[in-house]
Amino acid sequence: MKQENDAASRKQGETLKTGRALGAAAWTIAFLGLTAGFVHAQNAPIRLADRSFPESVTSTNDGALYVGSFNLGGVTRITPSGKVDAFISPGAGGSRSTLGVLADQASGTLYVCSNDLTGLGVPSPGDGKGAWLKTFDLRTGAAKGSFALKDDKSFCNDIAVGSDGTAYVTDSFAPYVYSLKPGATALEVWATDPALAPAKDGVGLDGIAVGADGYLYVTTYIPAKLFRIGLKDGKSGAITELKPSQPLDHADALRADGSGLLLIEGAGRLDKVTVSGNDAKIEIIKDGLAEPVSVTQIGDVAWVAEGKLSHLIGPNKDEDPGPFALKPVALPK
Image (cartoon, rainbow, N blue to C red):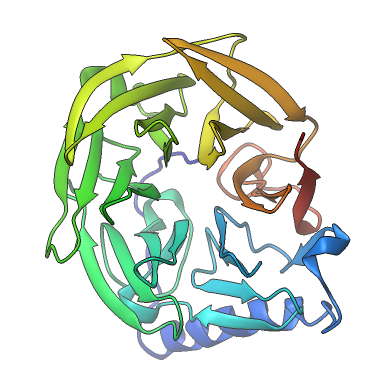
């Protein structure tokens, strides 16, 4: 999903301000094709902006969808009625490229992973360095907070929120799961283990979700693995690698789904995961997706974001990625 390169130069001054405006305009204009009569229940793909390279999607109980962008930054909101707005403008709150997004209705917070990706050759709005967890008001979009990941080489990937309101964050370039307790002013390393470390020059921790059983679950992208972390009284417990019923290929986003989990595999699959002991039963719900990166659930439909990131930072970057969309997938009963 992500790769490393040497640092690239950034545009500054008025060019940067113009880029922010153009980024917001690109999102808004591209979404105008969605009519006001659109309803998610129609289960039709939602067309996204050309070359917007979405990296994460989240939703609220009313059916609104929130989508970040690996290259344009910002967060676009799509309501069930089809109204579209640049809910978080590119560069707002000091944000850069927007990766993981998570709507937490209990606290009225939209959590956003922000990263400076110029080192990957990806220009983005803003000029801040490093990896950050940003928080925004879920109702107004106003910036609320900004929290740095600890290492210069950190990479903020995705977020989950526990029942007590604590946010947990994965770092793809270091073996850290961070926590941010309600009212805290800084992230803390909550769990770490050599098993969570990325492969050499690769991507480690990725997806994260709090299961119905109260455990925290995380994936590593390369090698593709699934782990369970004990979670009791806000403290981390044993870190256990689970044995999947079939090999995983680029394990990416995780979301809680009833008594199980929804898992995205970058190789093109949406899976249902059922954990029993140290075993993880993997059932493929949908195959053949185009480089999927994230999923969110509204009712009995999973909305999958196809990132196609190999066309931006990978071997296909000289090829046309084609149209981008959120794909609806009916979930098994």
